[in-house]
Image (cartoon, one colour):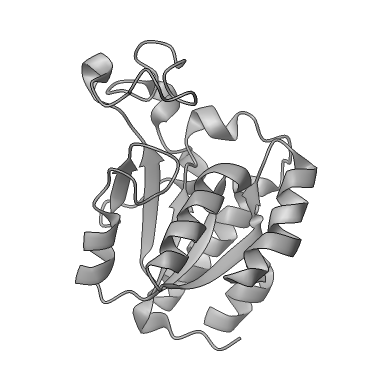
Length: 187
């Protein structure tokens, strides 16, 4: 894999306390941290994508099965579970993109940030493989971004779903690799 770093960004997605608490793999956050450190060392922008809603929940529709059942205040201002886990926290100079649905593009300014930075290649990591990673990959592919998925930089509560997505579905639209292999290409 030949990585051009001047048009690449790493999307570290939904690495918030609430999501991380569901991951049983103790090596998951250290692996993601390795990807973030490799990106930073190579001058690749790290964009932290988070789920967030307004006070009063005016951006949650009662027809949305996934989000309408969230407790009052969940992922709203002041929710400590909405904070990015400290092991992978953004630096002050790194963009934090707030999204309103599963895809990193939904209700966010991600596309504007990418276009402004001349980014055409996205490297995806995050929780959950069947949520933010799948939705973002599909939308990014439709927007003609070049895509790489860090399979072990993604996690899902259902290991079989994770396997099927990373081994059978994602390779149709993205290069799928490991954090370690990707880090070697940018380091």
